[in-house]
Amino acid sequence: MREYEVWEWKQDVVFVEGEKRAAVYDFRSGDVYWLDEEGKSIAERCILHGERASGGNERKFIEEIRALGLYHGESTHRYLPSVTQAPLTFAWIEVTQKCNLRCVHCYEGTRHEAEGELTREDWRRVLRELKNEGCFRVQFIGGEPCCNKDLENLVRYACELSFGQIEIFTNATFFSDELTNLCRENKIHVRVSLYGDRAQIHETITGVRGSFQKTVDTVRRLRESGIKVSIAVVLMKENINERENIIAFLNDLKIDDYKFDVIRKVAGGIQNRHLVSRKEEVKYACRTEPVFRAEKEWFARAMGENTCWAGKLAVSSDGSVYPCVFERNLSLGNVRKQNLHEIVCGETALRYRKLHFGLIEKCCGCEFRFACSDCRPLASAESGNLFAKNPRCLYDPSTGIWNKGTSEKNKIGGIR
Image (cartoon, rainbow, N blue to C red; front, top):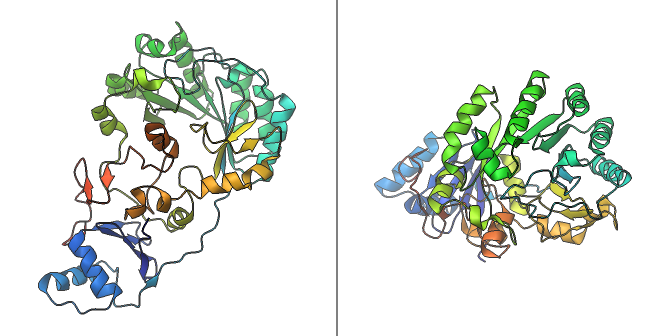
């Protein structure tokens, strides 16, 4: 793969060459300017190589660059920021595979049995080791985490270890009063799965009658207790047309923190029967225009690490450690055989965390690669290739064309 160049025009202004076009990142304002082919060519000749602007278009382009404060004749040089490894900041704690619901799209698969799961003491050791590694945020998940009889004990222990943020991701169908009190007293966040604004829709997906009302009643109880509640909605064939109704329902519940995700393919998963159409996926999940932010720290990370899972890991109920909760084909180790420090600093973990955009097909030639986020599990599930481009990005760097049109943001002459 060709190595495309990155230049600093002036302090905190960086020019990134792409396969067809280019981009200018202004870390001071956060803006990312998009250069067309002509703008890229002028920038390379007149700014990088010092040629004198001759034609009217070239002079106009340089004038606009100066007017934006991006360049005033400074000496340019290759941009080589200090790239440091992102610390471990977030961990999914999958305390059980058991679940009381039978969601049709479940990313865990159809089996919900507790076989060979970690003990309470195992989990307490994992939490201590996460804290020692500097992990700031933990999220207790399942299956359904409330199916683990030790959940309250483990959450309380996480509080004693003083993690910066503790969250429970639950279907909220049997969230105990004791757990509610623990969350209120320790400012623990609760994230709840909801699939519809009424039982007919929600229970078509969960497969259990009465689950809708139990979830809604718990959400109301948590809110009345002053607990921070957010809602996670997976859109699939069964509820894709209910999005606006769900938003209205959440507004009635006084919930303003919610997120929609379109159902994902999972390698070897059961999701295919519930996938939405490509048109619906494009509408609700795909990146269709160049709306990016220039952040200096993110840029430096993206030069050497994967922006999907660097700084994260998932510990499953059997002790297996993965780079992401959605990627179960890449094991980093097992906490029954190694301590977390050995796993996090191990050769396998380092290799996967360094899978940056420069190594990804098509992305390596994209001018937006240092402002973009990534999803390796989506890419590998769709194509079977860990190095494939994220299918939810509709930009083709080789043509400079977005499949769903282009944004007019920041358009001036040869710059968008």
